[in-house]
Length: 293
Image (cartoon, rainbow, N blue to C red; front, top):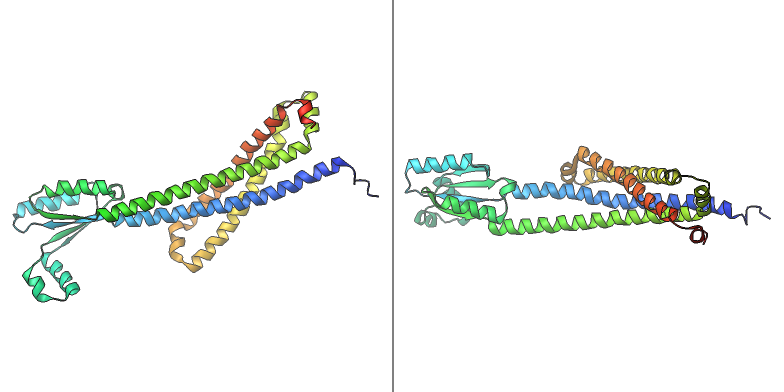
């Protein structure tokens, strides 16, 4: 007969350790998904910056305006706080562009085009309202014949960006809650297995901090280990992505990825410490009758 078969103490020591390993691996998987969300947000931020850099308008110059008014317009656009890039296109260049697209020399000769400025605004001015406000001010200038604003594109881009950002925030919050619950339940199982020992320590005068410390330390260590495992898996994923699509990898880069890895590891440790402290405090507040059940 196995002498340890009916020894509950042996089972109590074995069970928490096994659950701790399972919890560490589970938290690592949650952190992997959370890391993918974080890395995806970096790519989305880069794409957002590129899209917003393309937002702007075409300012058509009035040929009847004098040289002074044209110079004033040029200086205004160059020195404006919203100007990202500015390109002047002469009337001859505009006619040539339309002729190449239409393939009709007579049409462009009959309706000659005017010179224009291709204005791309900075990202902070890329909303539809900002573009319309800029266009309204420019239309008041003497040298401006018309302003063609990309408001529909701006609205669609900003709406898409807001939706993607909200989805990423919701997913990240859900994953953090899942990891919190995993740690909380795992620690609760470990404490339940040692509940009588904990109550005995309280009975002989052990302070709550002394009882809580080993549990918190173990959970912090598990969180760090889970973060390291998740970081290693994500680094391998990034190497694979670099071989498949270098553009996506360049949007992230190793420096930003390392920051994500460090935040994941810190998150695992912090969530572990908070969840464990709450779980231990729950048992420390129980009476002996409730603890022994």
